[in-house]
Length: 112
Image (tube, rainbow, N blue to C red; front, side, top):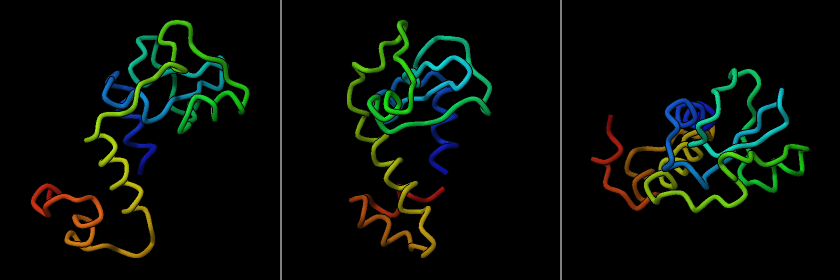
């Protein structure tokens, strides 16, 4: 589920996700911030990494356009969304109340 959220952030050039992850493009060997204005790669050619050093350890080099190795921390709301995705990916289902307690949010914020 996180990868789907990440991909939507990349397609929207959403700067709120800068610092939350970087994307590596297999065909070029370059990794970027989600907000990078470089041409959108094909989804099948993209890997997501938690940090710039993770991408570099896999052989990717930093984009010269967006300079992802200097990424800032993600916005607090984005961090909560990513944490919620992680919690919902577990096999044991959580109630809205449990999820709200874990994220320090009201159940009203979690309803669709």
